Image (cartoon, rainbow, N blue to C red; front, side, top):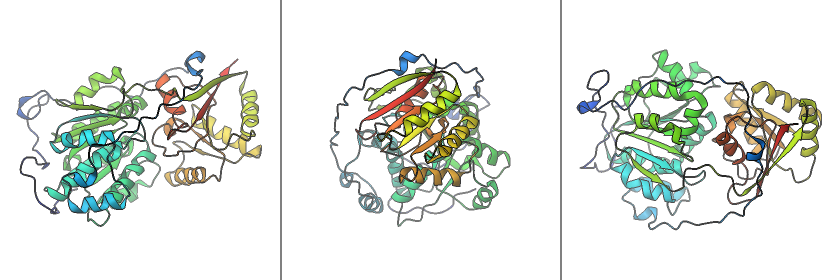
Length: 416
């Protein structure tokens, strides 16, 4: 792909996102500085060892709601008039804290580490300055990598909302859809490419996309993406881009064990942390139920879901096979349920999510693919049919309930 369309608006005199030429040897970057990318990692293989039961017992602490009042409004910002109109039409008036704090650093083309809790506008934090630069500067392409298909689609949808009335283009490249359709669509140019690592690597391997066309790299929910086993793929894809003008990493949590890999991506970064970065679910009531054997677990789950307070329930299991079996058992018991996991097509997953959001089904059964990227505010309960093997995964699972300041409850089955 190439990007040869002209931009609009006034150009910026001090910064430019034009693609830099790749220089240096195998281990040196532009200007002789050490290459900040590397190799290694990969999907780990381990036996199922659930986290300790005591970690999943917690009496909810009322959430202290701290409302952030921005120092500015979007109309005060030095944004292109077209973008101001799009933001206004989207119903946005005041920036969130991460948006307000990170804007100047992104405009100055600094590498960014952005840490902010879910629902605090991280996507807008990087899309607003990117779209503004597209309107004011020469054309450039941005590549956003996301760990799940659902999150990738949400990012593109927000881009479409914020570029309404403009001529900018975007594409989402994700698994679960016909790759031949992606190949056909890649015959044109795009300002924004949003992708999951696996699908993008497949397309690059078939020489259907030239990653050197992108000069800005954004890793959204980067800690989860690396934790899900995408580390090797993400490093490979970043290497194919060559020298970048800017790299941004955004996440709700910060895993200190990933510092070395983070350092490979970022060059003299600015950190904007509007939360501690430590995973927390203090405001969610968390309990465990000791149950012996799968059949008893199925019976316990069915009994739970028949209780009237169980209005919209997300059920997690460790494997696709187990998710499928749970869904079948629930439907046989007269409880409306559906499933999302890697074996389901993207169309199927989107329909299941839509049914869940609209209350057409009571239970959505999922693997950890749903632990990130789901934008559903009214999940009353999270049930872990099996405890996860990692505490951060547990926190992200139970964090799907208790959103937007509401109460939430998490129940985990533990082998008796």
